[in-house]
Length: 309
Image (cartoon, rainbow, N blue to C red; front, side, top):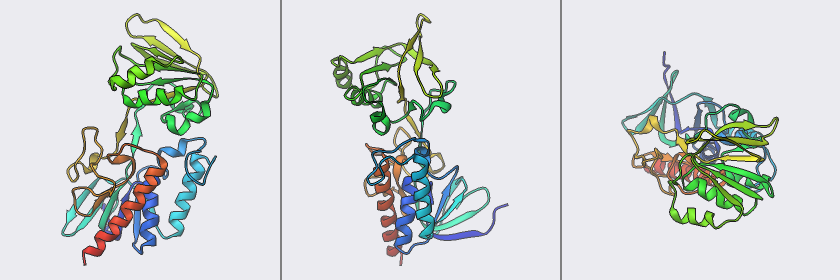
């Protein structure tokens, strides 16, 4: 049974970098913030073994980074709760976030629900994530300098990851399940000119090798069934992300990929609803840009609340 409404100034949906940063800026602006996180605070970065691209915290683990960020938000007064928001409803000039147990009434809402990486769905993928299997070449590529790696995917993200890795790794295998890429032809042509990039087409990754770290991948030709082992230290999976925006699809505009349409000001089409981090339309999805979004969205929400007087 749902309890009485719990009132707050700003309801933040998602406890990753964007959401927790938003709570810090909201509290510093004198606004009461409640953060609702469906699983565990930190988001995808929790599984990252080492972070080297976030300013001021070189070498910190994703887990330690997330713990510090959560502690900072809590110390400033943010109320962080493990609850999944099932829906948002408009009542007068307020928004109601509905969970299984509560109704949260807020003057403004920041959606920072994030996105999850689409997985290959093969055995030991979760086990080896952070131990050779990665979903972000920009985040983790530097750990594989001078080594042989593979990229799985056929869109622009996979092509761009392969290009980036080709500049720091000894060899890059680009594995794609078809013989044609979905990404831009110019990106394909650029890779074809790289001596250390090998295309592995019409193939799926079917087995991950090595323990406790990845030492290779087995690929299977979709046409012939032939199996081949690629000796690599890293596998970068780039087959897309899935934004967690289904509960808000009737309130805000989504692009064809399911991301909330919002610019650098983090404003959506719905008055009082802002979007921050990986769940919104943007070209770069990194820790630094998520933190930036959180700050921008919180200050925009603060200004919106002030305008309601």
